[in-house]
Length: 195
Image 1 (cartoon, one colour):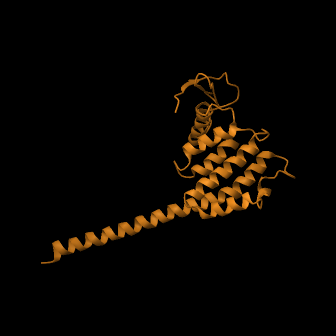
Image 2 (spheres, rainbow, N blue to C red):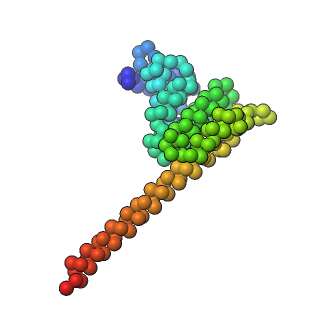
Image 3 (cartoon, rainbow, N blue to C red):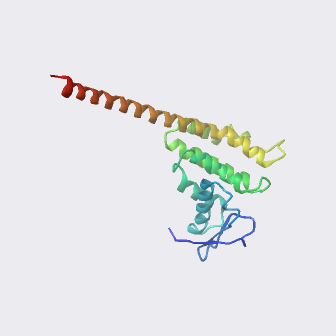
């Protein structure tokens, strides 16, 4: 990865961040960048690094780069990646919907590759054209409202399976703790009470 130099500057307009793809200087807005949650700050940072590393002005490719860096790094990372777009872009931004669509599909593919069969089924239905209405803005006054509705329905699948994985891990730990307690109890009995 090519290294970037971070510079705080309020001369980048209302954007939380911007990068000079020639020099590798990453400009962070001292007000707008700090208003973002820590995860969204990371998403914006890696999005800009994606522009530089891939040497592209393509927003969808930069979003994909940020997603690939952050997916699976913390609890609800897939959902947080999706909400990063609506957090940073205004609802009337014409690039919001295509970027969001691309990121939802990427999140579903990632989650399916990591064991979420429900995400795989949803992805197949979208690819067959059965769920395209989730992204349709007909009779919707506000793009932000449509994004929010789509995110709620599609990320429900991501949240559900992530919670299931957490519960499975907790159940495994409980079983391990129980076995350890049984072994300790046996050892105490054997060495203390045996005589």
